[in-house]
Length: 349
Image (tube, rainbow, N blue to C red; front, top):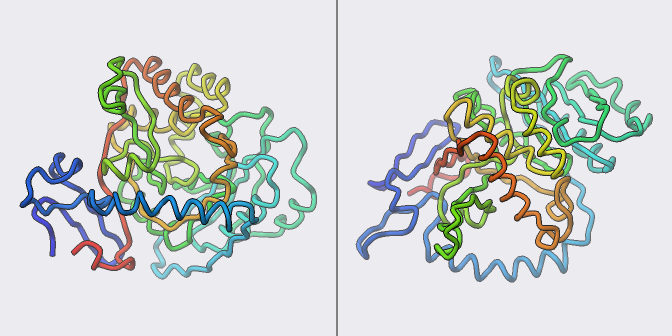
């Protein structure tokens, strides 16, 4: 059954759900309303919020201190005319994660080339280079950088590559089948940022119950995305974009933005989202996936205690700095969620 306030577009491979009434994002307006946000009902959210305490406790007790070895899944691509994806992997002093990621994404038939963004002073270990030197499908390249900068992840590629670039961190594992789904979405909207990790910006009044009237931009994570049923940013630690935007980021974007990224050691992903939204006027597209984040508390731009590191405050500051540089906020909100039909149609009845 399709709800009257929702639009459902389906085919054999994918499903897009979006709420057409903005009021639905904040819950029903009367007791008789039965519409649903694509991110879940308020009652369901309350139950999940309470349950999350137990889940988090379990994670820290039984999982948090244990190393995780990912298992790649070989996925065959049936359509002969499907194109290919070039993986651009950001890594830094985590050779075990990097080699595991190389093995993992090499198992995806969709992947044609893998470029490792190498920003360390020392060259890649010869043992690692030797291991992948004979690989041809996909071919592994080490993109040696002269300086250590998060901007390096968006350096244009000079070697063989496809238009579709999968930007990913060495600690992210996206199943091959879901990478294929994201690629199918990208083919239909190649100038959008397509990815698996949505985030949201708010104005300070809306973010803090209107206690703060400064109107500053505030960065919010997944829980706010889930609660509000909308997003405006996709993290480039697991996202597809057109190679043209790597050229634009490096050659056309204001140098002050790249300087901001270098000073803060943060926010290159927000800078890319600003660039793309400002250039195209398009929102990003969130693809629902079952990815694994092996470095959730030890990422390339965070540490194990995100709160004490001031990570969220730094992200909010980047939003405001970028707005000042651009002279406006170009970010576009969306409530579209893309999911595979293989996940089960019952979830949208």
